[in-house]
Image 1 (cartoon, chains in turn cyan, yellow):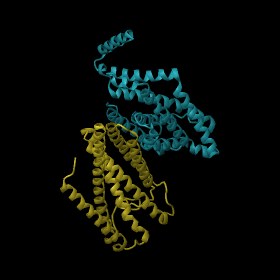
Image 2 (cartoon, helix red, strand yellow):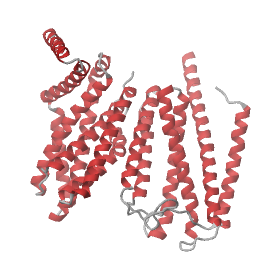
Image 3 (spheres, one colour):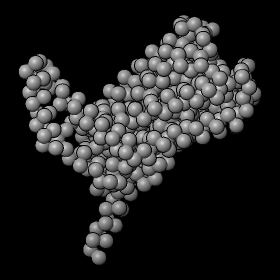
Image 4 (tube, chains in turn cyan, green):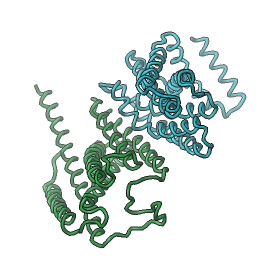
Length: 248
Length: 238
C-alpha cells in the first residue's frame, strides 16, 4: 500500500514536471480510474452481477422470441426495439446493485469521506456501470445476430449502442444514488428512470431501425445527433446535480 | 407558524372568486358559445381541455422553479411549493387527458392514439407520478426535499427534450389552436368572436383556479408539518 502510494506520488511529480497543465487533471482522472478498477476487480472476483445480467438478457430474448412468434420480416422490424428494451431492463439490474452493494457494506460512507471530488466518484461509478452495460450490449448483439438472423455488427449501430449506453448509465447512476436510500429501491429505480431516459430510448430505437433497414443516412442521422445532444445534456445535468444528491 | 387573518381573508375572497369564475365559465361553455360548425356539441369540452392544460403547465412550472430555488436557498417553503405544484399539476393533466379522450372518441373514432402530443402528455403524467413515488419512498425529510428537487429538475429537462424530439415528426393529427400548422404554415388564430371570448375567459379562470389550489395545498402542507412537529414535541415530553 505504502509502496504504491510512493509510486503514484513520484509518478505525479514526474508528470507535473513534464507538463504543468496535466498536474490538475491527472489526480482527478486517477481517482476516477481507481473507482472503476475497484468495481471491476470486485466484479471479476464475485461475478454476482454480470452473471445475473447475462442470464437475464438470455431469458428476455427467449421471452421475446416466444411471446412475439416472429417471422423473418417482423424480426427485421422489431429487432431494434428488442435490443434496446433488453439493454434498459438488464442495465437497471446492474445500476440498482452498483450503489446498493456499497451502501449495504457500509463502504459508501467511506467513499464519501474520502478527500476526492464528488464528481470523480460519480464518473467512476458511471464508467463502471457503463462497462457492464456494454458487456450486456455486446452479448445481446451477438445473440440477436444468431437468433434473429439479422447482422447487427455494423459500425454505426455499434456507435449507437455506445451513445445510448452512455446516456442511459449517466441518468441511471444519478437516480440510483437517490433510490439507494429509499425503502423499496428495487421497484423505485425503474419507475424513476424510465420516463427520464425516454428521449434516449426514442432516438436510439429510431436510429437503430433506420440503420438496420439500410435507409439512406439522412433519414436516421438526425436521430444520432439528437442522441448525442441528449447525452451531453444528461452528462452536464448529472455532473451538476450529483453533489446535491450525496452531500451528507 | 400561524397565518395572519388578513391573508386568510384574501385567500377566502379569491377562492370564492375562482368558484364564481368557474360557474360563469361553465355557463359560457354551455350556453353563451354556440356549437362549433364541423364538430358540433362535443367541441364544448375543448375549453376545459385547454384550460386544464394551462393549469397543469403553470403548476409543473412552479415545481421546477421551486426545485432550483430549494437547492440554492434550502428554504423548506420552496419544497412545499414544489409538492403542491406536482399534485395540482397531476390533477389538471388528468383532466386534460380525460377531456381529450372524451373529445377524441367521436372526432377521431378512438379514445387514444400514439400521436406526438398525446404521447408527450402521457410521459409528463408518468414522470410526475414517479416524483410522487420518490417522495413517498424516502423517509428522511431533509433528504426527501433534496432528492425531490433534483428529480424535478432532471425530469423537467428530459421532458422538455422528449417533447421537442417527438414533435420533429410533422404528422400530428392533434388540432393546433394557435401557431403554424402544415395546412397554414404562417400560423393564425381565426375563430368567431364568441369562441375567442369563451376560450380566453376559460384560460383566465383556470389560471386563477390553479393559483388558489396551489395556495390551499401549500397551507395544508404547512399545517401537516406543524402537526408533525407538535406530535414530536408531545412524544418527547412523554
